[in-house]
Image (tube, rainbow, N blue to C red; front, side, top):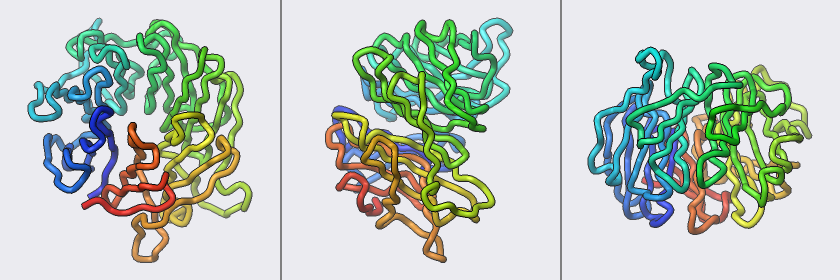
Length: 327
């Protein structure tokens, strides 16, 4: 069963949630030995936990937001996001959610129509797109405890930043990309020193060490030119080392022509060079396919990493060097 997303309870690392493609949300309370399906909604794309209260679970499901306040034991009626001016529901999908670290009532969602924000736990929503326009958004990071500093990215290969909770967005030039699917942030003392990583659909990961003003793009495989019909999609970027931003993991997926470059890549030099780390990951019958959708690092032990793959959930206990399947 394909796993699209993984999230770990920051207070108890044995509590893990996964999104199973077409089969809802599953939860384990013992580190992966026993699993229970806690929501059978078939079109869930991603999920996130509240940081102030990790019992609060939000999930993006087609045009709806799912919410539980008791760890998935019970779920509220699906939340339909509507335009506050017209009352019309979304025409496109909800792709990603981000909860403000200091307040689980403030939520951002990235949709096909831009960024929406709720200040009452998802009851009411306001479209926050001034300066951005109605761009499809695939990645969101809340970079401040009060939820005022937020980064967003998506189709068009554009990266956006707001200092005022989404009232106005500035565009940060980051190079020629068609779409950005993932965004990782290591905050510093002052946003001008933030480390940012983005992953795009053209085999490119880019890093900024100055809050997004300047970028260094790196194309996977550029050191050994490969003749590919189609580029890789970078589906997840995760900063592995909690102390600094030098050690990073990313997942790369491609089409049938690119199978030998799918899987997990690791950098220990801030993104200058990347090396595959696929020992133990699943393969197709030819022995070369590694399709990974998401990566999650244990918040209590950064040597423990989970990878959501097309063949299920995999775990590493050595910082991504080797992997074993979780039943």
